Length: 87
Image 1 (cartoon, one colour):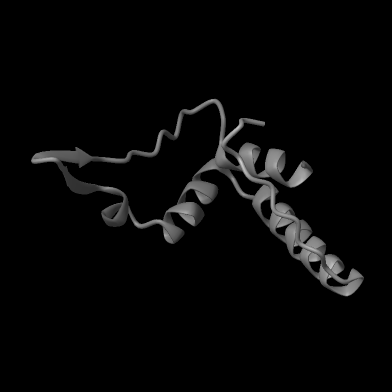
Image 2: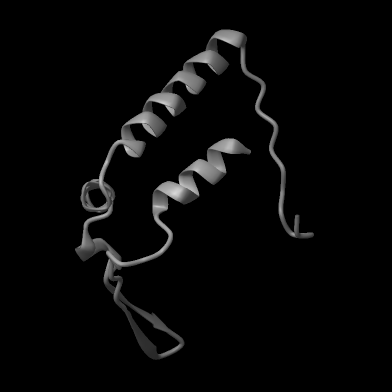
């Protein structure tokens, strides 16, 4: 953990915790059954490309940001999700 990171503690009832765990398990199950292509399309539905490509002016300089999905990537967002959920 880095010095500038903060830790927040959320206290849940057992019922709330079980509900969240069930949601997490359902999502993991759904995502694990998807092909790479299905997973890419599913994630794109949350973040349409037009929202990921943008221009931003900072101190008089205009920066253009473009985002691309690499279908040949070795790691997928699913891998990252599982790592986060395991914590």
